Image (cartoon, rainbow, N blue to C red; front, side, top):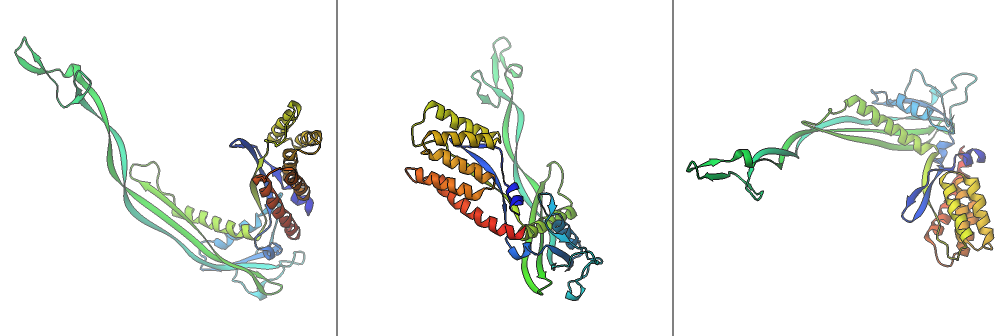
Length: 353
């Protein structure tokens, strides 16, 4: 089990965070509902008031849950799909595993509501204007012609194109869609309730007169909401990958030689390129060359160990960095708390995988 878990940990592309650099570490978080994660063989019964196929959607989401490319649950089909009944939960055939849990419940709400409202828009309007000799806009410009003894317009010379921003109102239509279901997971063997909860999802779409496109189809939105609710449930009953941003340290409290500065610089560059083994060798060389007094090297070695899923080794490095640091360091404090949580999570995962 441990090998499976460790292989799911990793480090992603390095990004800049202020003056320091950070990396994203991938970890596998244990299921929130621990007993549910241990109930590996499931059937999905019919849901009350389900005339839109939510049970089928939920069954598909559970069956598609995988860890490292392998299905996490075994889902035995229930055909025809019937309401939950202890007496109907049996083996599919002589070679199938015994069903341990049944997922059932009630579709509580699915609807789409439309409303209308007005909103302000702005557009640039161009118009013909007249400007005086100084470029100031005037409504009319007249020039006195001494030869003809009368006034005439000089539109051919002083005519210009002006523009202004004008506000106008348009009618809009808003589409609000909702879906919710109460989902229950029952332990068939012990005839006890493992989990019961209401899950919901909403979407809001707007379209105004003159906009490109139109409002989405109502059935497609409800379908997306059913997928959302199904995934919410699956994420609670199974382990999930998470991403944690971890800051690398590059500002030591001791004087470095030029060679030591280069060791740290190159080590961070190798981490950026995903070459952890090379970075680890350089950081180890840096740590040894300082008489094992460089807390920056010890901390960054902890980051590499954490990215490899070696949590106890990472904790040892972080504690060494803490001992060597002359003053409290927020990143080291966060690292120690984070790795202690990861060690507890790893122990829980070994019972779920």
